Length: 411
Image (cartoon, rainbow, N blue to C red; front, side, top):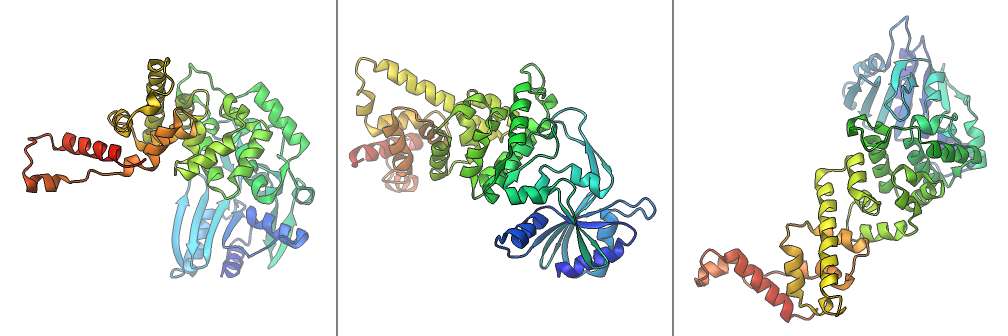
């Protein structure tokens, strides 16, 4: 089905060039030349060159395709500000884009986009191995590789397109780590030098006295989205290792870059069903500041605020028991439940405390794994049926019963 659609798109784009781009070209080359496994494409990225004469662009091309297959195309959405169209059909999806040229008014800011040539579209890509196109003409495919991406595939290197790639868009580093983990590649020496130089010079506006709205989006929302994609991928451990090896975690925080236990921290976070990004942020020198910059969800920022309260509580307990280091460890479970449950904290706060290595660890772990799941031996309905004379203090009575029940069980 996709081959037929491409043929029809080619006919509709007679007066300009249509090209297959992106991961499908890279993966096909890895299969064809390097014998990597290949299962064929389900999703295609196509670029059409803007034609001034016919005013042809992705939107007009998509309309022609829909008119030919009104019953087979299940979804179509136009992103006019980017000149792209997402089309879903019975066999997969096609992302159709008008060829664009990008320029960056300031490092890290969103680029200024205008329609342009296929070569200009390839020039805006992140890595040379992603700047390869297969131009379709008269039913034949012609490979267009102006930056030597095929050689990078052969050498196993990830190379940026130009010496301002990282300065223009530092999220390219996050994508490079994701590709590196998937393709078992790493940055070439020239690109590593670019990373080191760019981060040392720090060309982005990130002063503490400027409003968050003026911080470049490549260090805020776009950085967060790329990190979420990285942490969702199967090879996130390898990708995180690459970022740390390249010194790229300094984009987030110097403490994260220097932390040799991030992998263990995130493995624990996964076991405790915590979102990996909030777990990563919690290990920063100033988690709340980083969470605010990345614009994490408000409820996760509240978790970090409550984590600070948990740290203060445990520090207070430690100071109060400084003469007897085992005093707090000898507390009954009900005492720990009262301390942890009556402050309005989300359960995830205790999980963040556990992965952060807060002490004493044993009661926190027992609360997370067992105590919080235990219920009162009787319910509110049973209290009403038995007419137990407790007035309007049902909630407090049930809580005390539950804590007592936890105390008398083995733990």
